[in-house]
Image 1 (cartoon, one colour):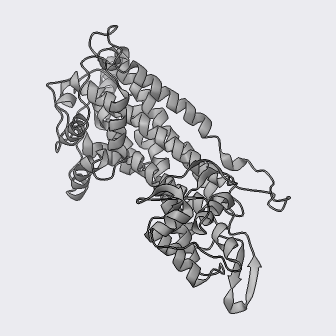
Image 2 (image 1 turned 120 degrees about the horizontal axis):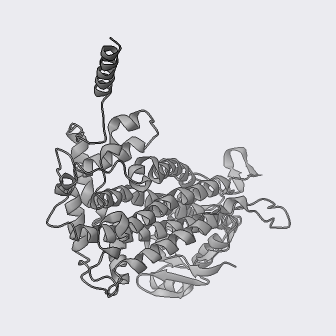
Image 3 (image 1 turned 135 degrees about the vertical axis):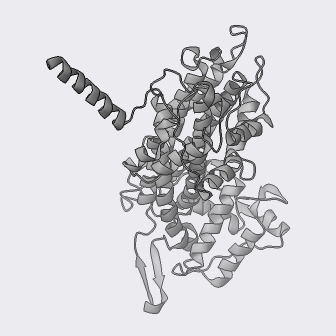
Length: 468
């Protein structure tokens, strides 16, 4: 009775893997023969058609898991690499498998649990952590283009407010930006400018959303690790006691709450990124050509790309309304308070995808900004990031169809092997491993307590002499 688009084969496979894992623990009443048939379907990548909508996240993910079971018994549709989407019975037969014939208690064993929340939640946690790391690199590149200062990432600043993750974010900025280890010609070009401080979206990066996302990702990783390995259904079979007990391990309340919080936290990465895109595009803030293109008026440059980023951020604000604050009574008021965890997981993934896309636009904009600062070069790690982007997207000389470029940059943020993080990571880890001394460049706006005391002492002496 589920509705909507089917889960992708990758997500269905993850869901089925988690289902097998918990069934193998026991306590469900499923037979070894039936469990072995489920495993054989998984190994052959015979994946049932599972609509994404229909779960309220209590009594488990009943509708999605019912569709999972439906394919395994040879009804509905299934997918495999060999057959594509086809009738389930045909797909199973094409792989030499037979439909499952259910024994007592096995129908309930297959459909009662939180594997949809857990599988989508695991993906959300992984992607949120990945984009949070890469957001630091993109922000560092933007700060360099906007001729910001590294002073805000001084170790001592973050030592006196030791939130988990804050010091790590500041460390990443120091490892990527101008230092004795990685000098930047761009940074040197404005060493003695009269700017006092940077805007919050650059200066406060260690204190903003990335710390929250990192903390949540760690907490949620632990939470979903437990849910992925343990028995989360209602009627538990305790063979040693010869007893079946109805409980509530199927309820998705706490993963739902945590996923709602994750969506709010990761959304901030896009909200902050969009403001930096504005600064890059606005000549009064960037000292670069308007919308990062020559011959403005004839060319619109990044004007509409910024509109796209703003639209995604605005959409995320609505998606960040917590689904878990809602509940509707179901099953004749037996299930009178539900978690809505399935929707929490799905919308968290939508928020994360929007965040990735906004940061992809910022990455393109920052690299375009670099073009206007040539022949000056930035630091070695940031030049490597620039080179990676330029390997898939050429600079803008005049307007062109931009959507493929945004998609190409998006892939650089989500692919595992060739990503912005994988390019920058060796430099970050080398900086950490070699314990490179922190560079503290001279700033015209900085002063020492010693010089302040000395000046105060001189003023006092002058006053004393005048009194005499």
